[in-house]
Length: 272
Image (cartoon, rainbow, N blue to C red):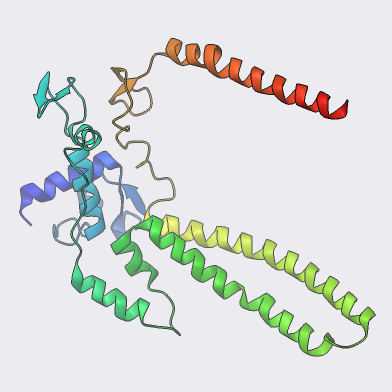
């Protein structure tokens, strides 16, 4: 990877507020990427490995969605306002049907061998996260954690079934009550354990306090005058508050009141 492309990726990663691990002499923790402090980040000298494949794809997608029209332009009958995002507008108009990254079949084959075709091994969560992203990986991490945790009530239930099933009815009733109580305790403990595990994974993947959703482009169907957002500091369409209140008080509120009156009248007719 040439130096210019690497610098552009770093700039895009900074805009997305990606977090990267720092060198050991700087603490070895995670910090938001900054081009003014590149020397503190681990592996920043190697442009080919500093960003994972997923991170590069995310940065490229972010840069594509950040392309904005500089003036009043019209492409294939689509008119842009100055500062309007180009790619989302093309997608809403049907000129672009989708933006998808190409698969890396070598890594897919590795996941198939180490994940899909295995039965008695732990899931390669790190490899899943590197390829499919944190949202997909956290689901399979939860699935594995939950499935493993279910062995506890399954084992206890098996013991109750072997020693209490078909015995004295009073003893069975006591056993069922105890089993239900143990299930409540297990569910509470599992939930707390999963909270800890999910927080560990989120911190390790740098998504614990992620701002990616905040800085994503607004949907192209949002309309309004372009103004600087007080949250992101970027140009975003702002829908007038008076129009929103007009719909709220002249359409939504009357419909709610009318529906409540219909329900009230029907209730009175049933009671009479």
